[in-house]
Amino acid sequence: MDGKVYNEKVKNPRAGANIFSILTFSWILRIFWVGYRRDLEVTDLYTPLKEHTSGILGVKIAKAWEEECEAYQRRLEQIAKSGSQKKVKEPSLMRVLIRCFGLTTLLYGLFMAVMEILLRVMQPLLVGQMLLYFNTMDIDKSYAYGCAVGVILCSALNVFVIHPYMMGILHMGMKVRVACCSLIYRKTLKMTRTALGETTIGQAVNLLSNDVNRFDVSIIFLHYLWLGPLETIIITYVMYHVLDVGVSSIIGVASLLMFIPLQGKKVIILIVSINRSN
Image (cartoon, rainbow, N blue to C red):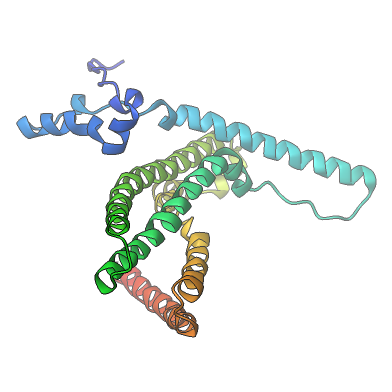
């Protein structure tokens, strides 16, 4: 036993914060004020949220993984009894992650879709309607004021929505990473001597310190894989039918889409060159 004294950390104020405090991040102001008056110490840091602890996340994903392996064994037994030559799908970590975090991630995606499709698309349309007031005298002044208020509300709601969304989706990526780290750790404890002889310590360390970090970044752009095409179709439809731009809208959008493969190729070349230099 060591003789060190471990002080209990301060309870995380995010756990009991109200909706206004969560949207404005005012629950974090206390630690900023402490850091302004003096240097922060370890005892000033908050305890992790209960939902972020590796114990809870590890048990959750370990249970889902065991269920996945048991389902795989049942399928093998059923095929062996029937004498079929059908190939059985092996246990998939992707299915386990979807079962554990899929619903919450989907809700974040729907939340992001409302922001991107409604707020982002409505704001330029309202600006266009407001500019018509200065070009023609047929538009009522109250309607123009309403459009101006709508532009302000879209900007304000965008600020109140995007930052909590980014914080939530980053937390989700962190939870996936912590859960996978816990699952890897549990797996290494159950490995046999033969399996340990075939696996190096460097492989396990690389998984825990490097590979799992991809979850933190990739989940941020996950929903843009389907939101991007959907929003492009909606904007093209609005320009073609609502704004009466006509065929020019399709040509303009197509011109922008043509640069995506070129841009992706250039980015890949830069990433490869940076990795080589490192």
